[in-house]
Image (cartoon, rainbow, N blue to C red; front, side, top):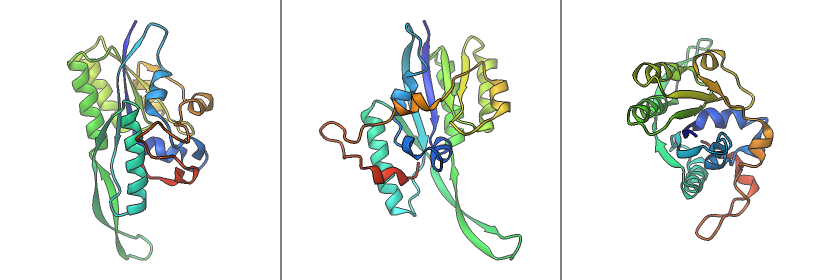
Length: 202
């Protein structure tokens, strides 16, 4: 019997699903987290990490609905932020502004390590393909060697370095995604989920 905690890199999953697997964009991350459990295991927490693209009002509205649904399902939500950044085009040499997500990797890393030290899980699962989280896994191995850190690579992506660092790997097959999505409508107090909303930004 093991206590599991699941940490979801929202944008990493979103961009993995956006083009070829749009039907799975409205994932219930609590339901997805429960797929990693064995018969006698327990789920101590599911945490979703993301940020709001505030310069895109329509996306923000849809994202807020998605966040509301996650919280309804019992998922903890941790939000970072975007920072405006000026970059130069190497071809035309013109400069323009873009936005870069900040804090999400750090938020995930700090939380995974802190929860290990606080003995809040026996096994953690990182739902991401971001190899920047390898130092967090290594730190847990150093500070709390009894803890195991696994990865669930989003469908359509890969990360050999992340897999090689993790203690175990959990697959994200389409069958699991199909049964882990929110229904078209949720119980009272929740906004109706229409099919056209799958264009939201996470």
